[in-house]
Image (cartoon, rainbow, N blue to C red):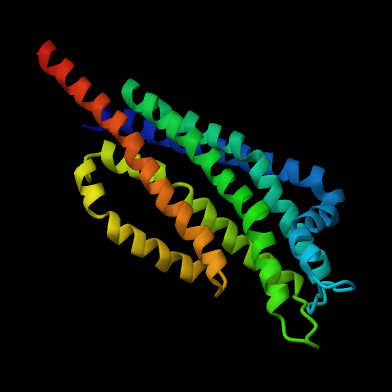
Amino acid sequence: MSDTSQPQEDSFISHLMELRDRLIRSILAVVIVFVCLFPWAKELYAALAQPLIASLPRGGQMIATDVVGVFLVPMKVALMVAFLIALPYVLYQIWAFVAPGLYSHEKRLVLPLVVASLLLFLLGMSFAYFLVFPTVFGFMAKVAPEGVAWMTDIDKYLSFVMTTFVAFGVTFEVPVIVIVLVRMGVVDLQKLKDIRPYVIVGAFIVAAVFTPPDVVSQFMLAVPLCLLYELGIFMSRFVGSRRDAEDDSQQKTA
């Protein structure tokens, strides 16, 4: 009994060591990129704040109410950018760790989904930065009462940007989520079509929670969410048919 358990313990320890090594590599990759970006931390924050700065009245500026905020906030932005740049390498380390335990058909499904998830998340962030931010900030500048100096703290602005990035990034993951649910057999296409009205209502509720209290920004989150849900249903047709084809071929082989 001890002879049988010994190889299992050795295998478990080797997996832990491999996980540790890949985590260290991932962290080092982020740290190295961060160190390279450190001299341009202020420029990176300026680029992140550009949509708001462009919407401020002439002479308007952002403020820092925290003593160390002028240093820490740009560092946070540089770290965020470093993580995004190193993310493909981090995902590769994760893939290299889990891939040996997957079947060939699982590898054919998981790898495209991981790549698609990354691209869709970045697309959601880009959508928020280039379309949502100018629209929202422009609207806020117009509705600001006369005589009110519309300025914001740089740390609060960063918090708002991060929340919006996550909201739109996750929203753009809807097609991948739908495909995974269909592939795993949790729901079928007909069920997805039947719950479409509830998804539309839920999209506007989510938009109301994660966007500023204006109709424009809520529509800019809810409408893409609904469209991406429809895209997920459309793509799931091909995933479902491929799964059925595999099942049929296995039955024929049996």
